[in-house]
Length: 248
Image 1 (tube, rainbow, N blue to C red):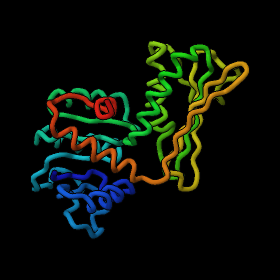
Image 2 (cartoon, one colour):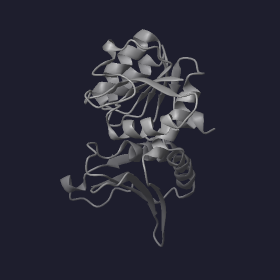
Image 3 (cartoon, helix red, strand yellow):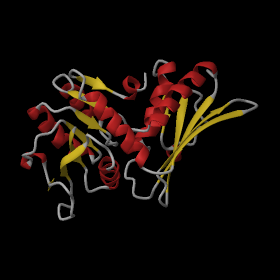
Image 4 (cartoon, rainbow, N blue to C red):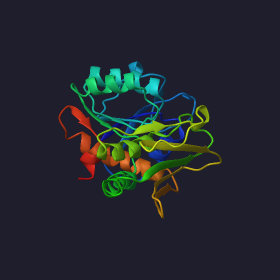
């Protein structure tokens, strides 16, 4: 499987490179990144228009605008694309959905298989604890630029499906002086140090609290998930896929 890695010079790009080098039948044939002067075993380009290599699949761990630029290349060349970039706007997500009519696209805010299992678990809990007050606390390293994390939103959206998407999301209580709304899901974002990612869902009832926590200790879990997604995606027809399709 010949891979184009978008975001090759970033931290997740580095994790993918290390993981793929140990695997058989996988090869990164080219990359897109900001620092093209780094030494790699494959060519690095500033944008996809410069690429000449034959590619089976694109794996994208970059920034929203870089994702959209590479998406255009994927459509033009008819190449499946795995998108793991977070912080995408609603407009950008709409463009991805339209692109999936032409090519297979796999998108997930978190490529960890366990996180997506967690999403299924908290969804089942929400069905039982219908009256619980729900809070989400997410912690990441000090370089993460989006808040709340895409994973926190992924988990919230899974819960909100139980309530037919009627729950409101509260991202900033500093702007109001009102008691907690019974119909909200609250978010708290912590940034510091070198934390890879920690997400806790809290279900508060009158006399007890249930907490579900996932913590990633290194970024390799995301690399493994992205590769599994790529292997799955190259066998699919055009469409929009996610972790639910992979972990059935």
